[in-house]
Length: 153
Image (tube, rainbow, N blue to C red; front, side, top):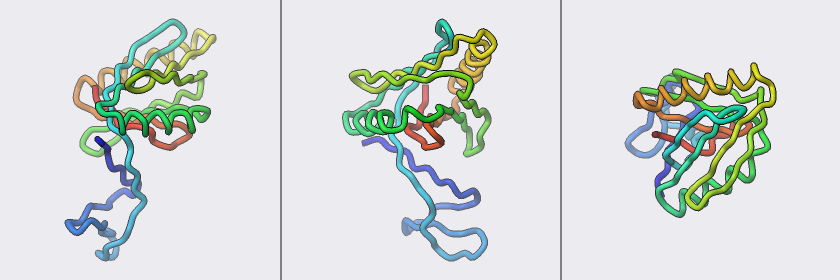
């Protein structure tokens, strides 16, 4: 299964023995870590907003991703594009309605709004995130602030 480890404590680094070392004390500690499935994402504009199509490489990653989407898809969708561990772009889809549709090898996330200005903002977010992905960034897709997958294009 292809997974990505996420650490939510800035300044923490992985130690060879599997623990983490606190920058303040130098003592190993267990930080808050989460494993999320890796997938490929395609972002495209659509009528009323944007569509993200996520495809997983293997069955276990796909099942994990789909289960997380089913459990969390009612929460606000957000995306973070990162390069070298730094967030370059963050888009919160608070201005729209996001729906998840399961596919054979992943999930399709459709974010739309009936409001013209919200649609314009969604499509601008789509352009920005697509550009970041094309330039080698990694995208973290979240529902309700919980990461559900780590994507590349």
